[in-house]
Structures are given as structure tokens and as C-alpha cells.
Length: 286
Image 1: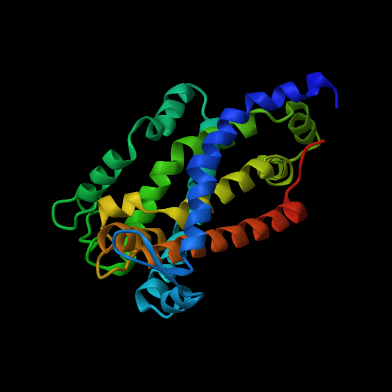
Image 2: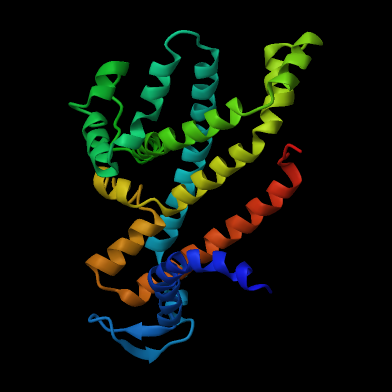
């Protein structure tokens, strides 16, 4: 290897160092510690093998949190993709005022997560919340498991909306205009142009947004901490929020380490499945 070829690697050394210190080293320590019993002061006691995992998967609260996580994912991911796509198509169909609409749709990126979660908490209150006043129904948002989960899904969509909208809008506007113009000259309708030409061409970006949405659904914690605190009756308590409770409230570090390792394994499996689907279904422009 020539001497000059090694120079670019020095530019990424600071990032690699930070990743090693703050990401990889804590993760390796967590996996290692999950095979031991841990005292409340955080020191390792004795080797227990897979006992922590046996207790974890036999724990009803963990199984309930696991089910809640995937329930949230089923609600959040399709809703997020559908609303993002609808917003992008609406923007592209407008004439005057397009810049104003774009600014409104990107506005969530400028607001802090905790602030948004707190605002949603008061908006979805059954008695005094503005949402029930707007729709004219007394929906028990915080007193019913399904409605509480749906309100958290709306919060998740709002948090991700700005960035996802920007990504999809950029992908749509970077398409080769000559391809769609040729299709229209051949008599294709707008629906056919979108489904047969535009949608396949923006599928890499859609897949990326889908993957990020799944990741956000799997790791959601702070919005639930602010908005519902896992209620009612743990119906919105997710895996990562359960990890937070065990680690920082109960000081049950052995369970917390096991939960973090389990979340990593689940995320890795989802990544592998997503990569396989991408190779088969996603079309890249040559």
C-alpha cells in the first residue's frame, strides 16, 4: 500500500476512538456482565451463566413489555410511512404556497423531544385535552390500553416526521424528469406514473425510512417516559423503558444487562431480515 493511501484513515480515527470508548466498550461490558450476578453497587458477584436470561424470559413483565413494543411497532411504522408519503405527494401537487407547507412539515425537527412529549401529554388528556374537543368525542386516551398506545404512536410519528419528510421529498425531487415526462407522453396517468415509475425509483429511500422507523419503535423510551410512564397498567411499557426501570429505579443491573443484550439480538435479527428483503425488493437506479 502506498504511503498516501493511509492518510484518509487518520481522519476517521477520532470517530472510531469515540465509538470504541462510548459504544463498543460499554456494549461488550454489558454482554459480559449479563452472565454474572450483580450487586446493587454495580460490582460483579459470581458467574451465573444463562440464569439471568432464564429469569428474564420467564418474567411476565418482560414478556408484556416485549409484546407492547411490537404492538407499538405495528401501529407506528405503517402510520409513519403512510403519512410521510401522503405529505410528500401533497407538497408536490401544490403550486403556490409550497414553501410554506414544506416549512410546516419540517417544523418538528426544530422542537425538542421532551417538549413535544409534554405537549402531547396535555393534548391527549381525556377531560381537558384539545384533541377530544376537536374531534367531539370523549376518547379515553390515557385510560385505555389501545388508545394510550395509539396516542404514543401519534407522538412517535410527529417526532420522526420532519426528517423522514425531508428524506422522501429529496428523493422524489432528484428523480430523472425525462422518465416521467416520457411516460406521460405515452398516455400514462398520474397514478400509473407514481406506482410504476416513481415508487420503484424512491424505494431505497422508503426502505431506509422503514428501517429507521422500526429501529425507533424498538428503542422508544423517553417519549413514553414523559407522556404515559408506561401506563395505564403497563400497557405502553416497552422493552427499553423496562430496561430503564430495572437499571435506574430498581438497581437490578443483572436484569438490565440481560435486557440490553436481548434488545441487541432482536435488532440484529430485524437488520438481517431487512437486508434480505432489500436485496430482493428494492430497486436501485442505474
